[in-house]
Amino acid sequence: MTQPIGIEEFTLMAGVLPDDLPDDLGTLMREAGLGAGGLYWKLGIHLEEASAQLVVGTMPVEGNTQPQGLLHGGASIAFAETLASTAAALYAGTRRIAVGVEVSATHHRSARNGTVRGSAQAVHLGSSMATYNVELTDARGRLLCSCRVSCMLKPRPGLS
Image (cartoon, rainbow, N blue to C red):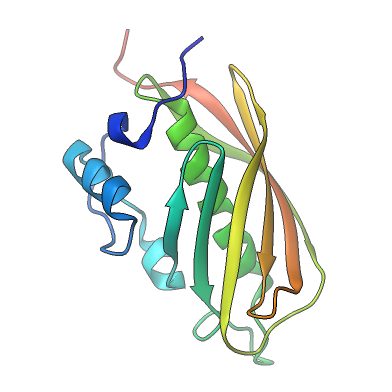
């Protein structure tokens, strides 16, 4: 079984990264050529802490609302999957990739403004699957959404 890697060893292949990643993670990911997809920027996600066990970040409500002015449930789910997928990628190491295969969510309450804080906590780190519980809260610490995200760990293409 491949062992999880630390941020200092994190190397993958892809495009560009946002400027607001934690310094050590952002630098290492850039050096490895890893990029975040466009949805990261569109949602305004900011990562504050990242490891295979726990990823913490924020997302603004503004710009991520439905027509009624409430936080869009799809934005919440995309935020949750981003947090969990980041953790799973760190866990996957250099020889595997993490691919999201399941997301379930319960929306407990909504928000009209402010910032949503999210944390993805590992509940299972296996040889072929990583699963995370994700909680999204408002500025007052009230639970907005709880999600479970599972990522399949597959061999990195091109490696033998």
